[in-house]
Image (cartoon, rainbow, N blue to C red; front, side, top):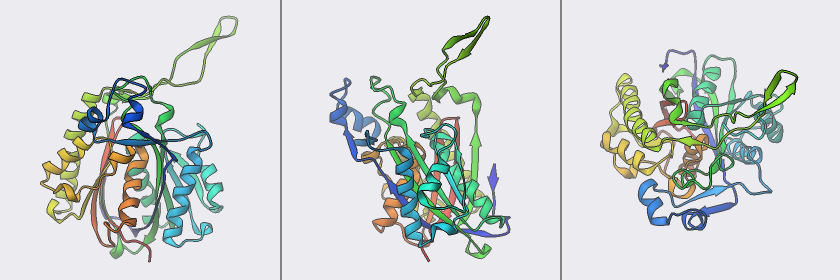
Length: 339
């Protein structure tokens, strides 16, 4: 799917927010559970620690905190929001968590729903929300990416348990005029034939129902991942989709202010930067402190960079999300900031 500026209106990114659990799990802590150590994990992933939701915390509460912070930065009354779009693959409620978040935020006039695309979720949700704004049907949207992968990790599998953490991030979007459009373009991709490289499959267990019939019990198995194949997928497809998007819009990599990728593995971030000869200093990364928080990584990183002053209004950002599905995509946008 290719997105171009052939739309009625524009969209502005004007607020960010994030929230993380209070519990920090370091590499040394994990070494008490599985046979691993800080040096081994950092050398292969770039991760030093991750956050894990505790007994008195929930993903919906984390999402609400991130969303509230984004609304506060934008300076918006919650009653002016038209859409709350929540990207998550690990909701508190399988029927949908966005309505609960909508209620917590007090955005009573907004329609709210979930979007599931795993680590690509935030980027897919961001693009989805912009279409409502650009076609004039809505004026303001809040896009939240949040995941609690700690619930679905096999904590005895040292290959995968070191990768994941919990978190939430949010971006506030507002419809604007075409000449002020902050979303330059996007590309979205899916290849379900490779989906078994990374999935969280349903746990198939059957029970007697009535004579001659049975039913399948609910539940899911832990995350299953072929790490080598996922790595090869990312270092091949992410540069390709970014290069195509930059070519379509005649933008040279050197003109980018920032490269903002899904925070999965530092080696992937470095490989993409090398492909475009982008200095590592222009690659936004907080992977070392949070690990892979799935749909939360991009907005969590963006919020951090906005608040610490690295990202300024007008900065041109190339972003890419990639992961389970397999799904991936890229977007070019300018951060406008609150008016």
